[in-house]
Image (cartoon, rainbow, N blue to C red; front, top):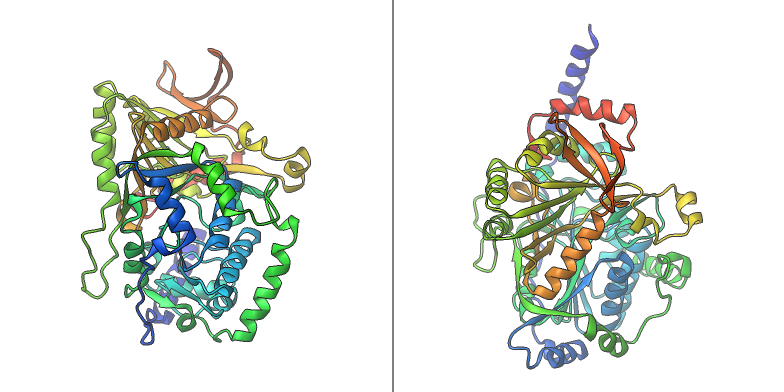
Length: 527
């Protein structure tokens, strides 16, 4: 039997086994609906933000969090300041240093009587389920999994067998990322809860971006969280993980997390190791804020068993962004970890450049990507993007601005490299989107996504300048078409070409061969 036929038979048997063994999606008969805290004016944080927005004519405040350490700091500061509620919604919550620090902060808030609700997508959960189950068993804490499927096995193979048994669960993910405290202040953007998103010295570090915000833009944020929290897809973790964690186990885990939180080595370099006073932080915050009008974009909750769960407050994030792009008149900056255009988006790109809009596309290189299949789908389109007039830039895995955050010893000991995770767009340096939405078919058609669409020249200029630093020499390569129509990678400094390559830079022959093999994948909608 030849190797190809043998491999095909093995795959067929594996899929058939998966489909026959997979369990039914988990239901919950004990879940109780709950609603977001809606009296922010009774809290210290609510009073402070109300005072800061007074006289602003309905504008909201936005803080650009370009650096992971600031993003982690503000999550911790807000958790420490919480008096009534914390609602957190994430695609991933890892069992690593950053995950433990955030979990400890939320459990400490629960000790003060704060109600903590945490919703985590289950399809890519990498953490030990018992770690999350003990979190959910703590007093005043509720943890729900979005679209859990089958029991949580010790075996990762069996876990994936469960997923393969229902491709609806595998493909449709809750990619949303939102952190709301006392109904008053929120952090929304592209970061999951894991060390690589907050610039810890770990082998692979993500360049990402969040916005901290307060004001009228959050009017519906709590209600939108509730729509996911109370949806048919959200299941209490105690209904999905066996054995159910006990209160004793939860308290033991909290004690372990307290020790980690007291250890300076648990934090990224430059991070504080003592809680800061909210009053001092808010005073220092004011000069850094950008003011403008904002809109919280959130995709509708998917249907379940034919029962509509759509609401007027929800949007189709991809459609709104497409319309905003079409209205651009001078320039558009797009930064997307995964960049795969649907046919109408490719057509729009050509139309925009034809009428003089300068389009800057920033994404991962083959050397910096963390999903090679997604990169290959982008690579198939890259030449067409260039032919349509886009300026295309690919992140270097040794980006100078990222390396500057760490010591030479940290870089060497961890064999560190960097990848792009930001999901950001700027239109005419006037309107900004920061959120969870990648410019790819998965974000358009499969995932639920969210983000902030903000009209503020100050914020737009700050984010556009940030993207332009990311695409500058030393941080990214520019991809061009040469006179023969072939793709080349350049570094241009002061108008002089200092680097030129005719193949994917900083990659091995084996990496390029693997990418070539993946060219046979036919359906980019699954990327």
